[in-house]
Image 1 (cartoon, rainbow, N blue to C red):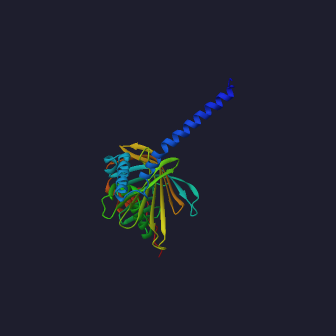
Image 2: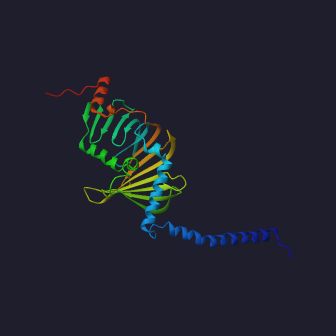
Image 3: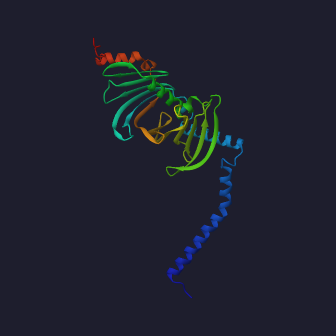
Length: 289
């Protein structure tokens, strides 16, 4: 009896399906063993610690290794989104950002070159059409808090701090990419949960869990990294988004970035802002009698 063409196709399809199913049966024990090996629940503490340290080393190497770790300063331009109080997008503004790591920042807004925010450790100043003034304590405290929850500062300057612990938290899928989760907890009980892409070893998410001092409830800061570019030997995300407790408050799109250009520490002082004010002819408003 001869089989019709449809019958042949059906038989061939059944054979292929059976072969594929058999392959799954054969590979299932290996996959199961692998998943058991990488399951943080069943791993021994020593194995978990070794896995976490290996992930950290792979991530640092992917980011640029010594070139990444030895970055002293950066000079970047881009545009950032402005968000209203309800988290809605209200527009974009160009910026020029200078940094000396870990705690010096100078942010100039291109929409009005007279608007500059400068932070230097526990001090801060701003320049606007009213002249130069000190940043309010809440703003300075916010800057200091951001430095403590910065994964960049964590990797570059804090990995040798006493009381730091590493933990492998398992695998997942983020943005359709398989990732491994690395948890780093510091001595002040901040937990950094970093999603590292298995294929590239680059981070795509960082969730920092802290306690809200006002409510004593946990608070989550999420940073999303994308659009990576290799610049001066350093992998650089050209798109960064940030959310706090589910509310988006920052989105930046970088146009250029350069490292170790010799940014002067003098630019992160009140005197530098006063000099710019003098150049622009900005004078503080006259005091009323």
